[in-house]
Image (cartoon, rainbow, N blue to C red):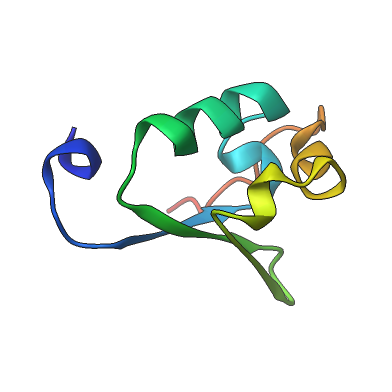
Length: 77
């Protein structure tokens, strides 16, 4: 996995919360294990929301990933 082998800081951008994971504890574990992730940006289509590593330790922030909506579909050709 590139994210684990690089020494560069990573800003991870996902489409909606479910685009990354719907389990908050999995998100927390993922960020904890991949030390190069500095920020996660959520693209809601009409706005962006970003969280740094420290903010993801906040229960109110991490609970936003507790969603069951299907991932946003990309355009199909």
